[in-house]
Image (cartoon, rainbow, N blue to C red; front, side):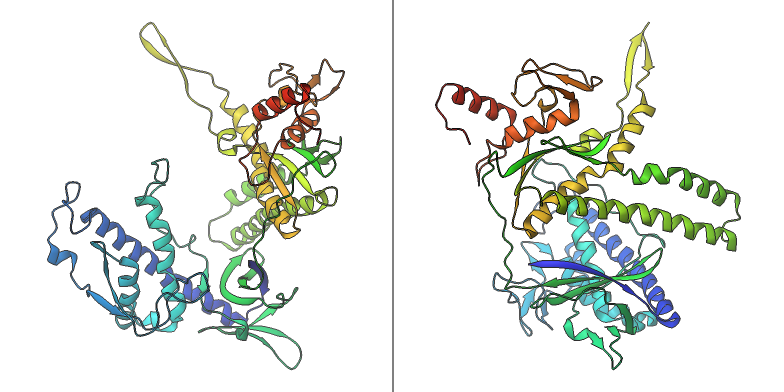
Length: 476
């Protein structure tokens, strides 16, 4: 199992300046390596043993310029097998060419020696931090060049400006880097920075080992995120069959945060809406100050802290809510919403009048306000958190297709409504607020879920109801 623990750092002024100074050479190195990848990709685009119909005409000598055919492994490789052992060991001779392609990550890592020899400011930087700069390039670049299963590619990776490269990663930290002095003060030893005081608000679990650490600046100071891992603690997902007694339905809303199938509600805190007026005042004051002046910096700090409060509250509230919900039952049935479609920009509405293209009103302001409310509720973050909490508590979450649930009640009979209709009145006698009613058919659909099977839907639930009416199934 792998966990991430975040701690507050209390560096001295000298240490804070050192960390800030290390960010700039890392940023330059990231941009240089990304530019090298783009230049190489635009020049070749195909393997060396393939016909380059879509590539520029580049000679083989230029492609192999300053690139050795093999390399000698100086340390154990990062890639590991199922047992946790590195796939490559120190002293192994590994080829830099694989399938006709130059292995750019390994070539760029080997080239860092030349970088440190040519530019003296890189000598003050920890070698592991400098090597880790290449790995974000390798992570982001294939997302642009390699299409996904649907044939779509992500956007082109961007070069990092001064304000957009804000973290340093130490990839080989361990428990020995955490030091306690004679006065029981906790320090973490960072290469080329020194022993930095740390707020040790919670201990690392027994049996877990520190793997990596990422130093991050925020509005209230410096923080470090430690990745801890234990091979002895397996990652297990509980498979619990939903029944009428051990499960409840949950509908995500805007007026209230969530609606439960038992009639309870959780109020929506609306952190962003509550802070919008103060954010607007601070932004207006900031615009009237001279950029870079002392009053401008003070207002900028206040604005950063307010944004930080909204972000932290939006992360903390879903976690607290999920833990409270699992105190009520073992299985939660949640609608699987497509938030990307719900928050999509309003489409352009056009028509042809007298041979001319005319743009018709499409209510972009209304749609924008709706998107803001959905994002303020952090529904996507809640679905991610509830899955994590379910795994931690050995409980279960079932996601169902939400299509048609707001038009049906607990009896699953259809009662046609428009999106503007906020009340549900069914022929079975139920009459209540629409979102509160939607949680009941969600639970009903979730009862059709079978452990290890595909996600369930309204169509399967209706088929199950027909069999139940004919006496072919037993009530769960």
